[in-house]
Image (cartoon, rainbow, N blue to C red):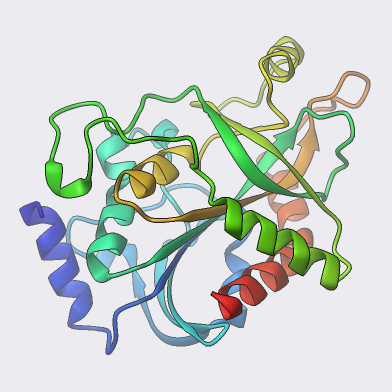
Length: 269
C-alpha cells in the first residue's frame, strides 16, 4: 500500500467503527441516495488527507458511512473526473482507498446520454459492458499490491449482479434497459456526428466517468455493478441543446427508482 493511501485509510479509520462492506460512487445529480442511508458519519473530502476535492456542480463532495440494505456502506457523494484536470491516479484513488478499507463490492452510478434509439429520457440502464475512450488508469508504474499488470476485463460488470438486478427491477415493476456505456474525456457534450460514431462502434449510452473506477476495482478483484440514468438523447431527430443543469434535474427525478434497485440488491448480497 502506498504511503498516501495508508495515510488516508488511517485517517478514515479513526472516524469509523466498522469497515464498510459495499462501496458506492454517486454520479451527477444522484447524491440523493444518501437520504436512504442510515448515516453514522459524513466527512467532507477537503478534510481527508490526500483526497481529491470535487469541483463539479451536482457533486457535493462528502464521504458517507452508514447502513443501507442492512449492510455497512461507504458512499461517495460526488466523484472525480479526468476533465477536472485530475490525473487518472487521483480519479481512481478513492477506489484504492475503499479496497484498503475492506469493501467487497463496488456500486457505481452516472448520468449519461443515450444513443440507443429505443431509449427515452429518464430510463435506467444497467451497464453490461463498456468502451473506454479515456486514458487507461493503469498506465504507469505497476504496483503488484493492486493486482495483475494486465487484468482481465471480460467480466467488468458482474454477471450475477446484473441478473439479480434485472429480477429486482421486474419485482418492483421498474423499467430497466441494459447495454454498453462509453466513457469519453468531456467536458463538452457530444456533437451529432460524435453521437452517430458512438452508436456505430457499439455504444448504448455515453458519459464522462465510471470506467476508470471500474477498471481499478476489477484489477483489485472487486465485483462491480453500475447503472446509468439516461438524461439526454443523442439519437437523430431527438438531439437538442443540453445543459448541465438539465442533466442534474433529470437524474434527480429518476434516482428514486435507482435507489430502490441498489438498496434491494445490497440487501440480498
